[in-house]
Image (cartoon, rainbow, N blue to C red; front, side):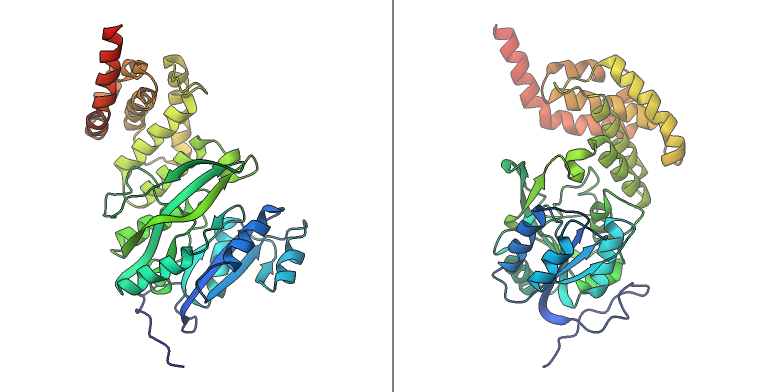
Length: 355
């Protein structure tokens, strides 16, 4: 069989010693550790793909809940041994992959039946495309919550405001992964965001599929369901800092601080915000000593105002302070968001005036 040569990776790629991969084959990696019965849905969704050439590899951290017996009975390639977490498991899986394209699907999530077929078609339509992403439905405890629709086009600054790309359903060509290197296992929550930024910064083109490719499940035992949004946003800030985006990292820490101060009723009380700002400023010396705590404080008040304005005009009280206006990065953030939120705010003011 003639094997089509992949694009040559740049020097320093982590997978270049691997033999040439099989054209058209897609390798799906599933990291797992005591996933329970949810794993069965994940396995079924990969087995039911309409694309005829799919390799599923389960990298397990040493589960004792029947996971090994299940994947063995299915005839799925697997490794089961202690690891250093999800990123370590993914790197093991990518090293084992024999496909031309790779992606990962966590044990809680599922692919729609033609997700891989549509992804491969996007690669075939443009040989310069190095990765493909699409929409993703979010379910909580089995019920549809929302649909994630990422930006149709990605540029150097598109992802500065956070991770807008759903990891389930995203596929990466091996030549692109070779070029940017392995998953950074220093991250536990935002390793996908770090990978997207490295792909974007390397100038590797992406193709958007404007259809739902996967279903992302949130439940009490999942990372997203059990870990506070503050921790996710803090790690996104560290990713941005690593990528050379200190201003955007400060804004991300501001978003994290505002989220930590927000009540279940979507209210950010000034005293609660002040306490969270003091706590985060102390924490910065250890987690992100390169960030200026004054800019993070300014960002916290700016983000608190914008966050509360989504549900109440009381958000204006945070924006009426001096803090959000002290630095150019926070002034630009408020100005950009104000233009977007102006119709909603003026509509509420008009409604109040009419009463």
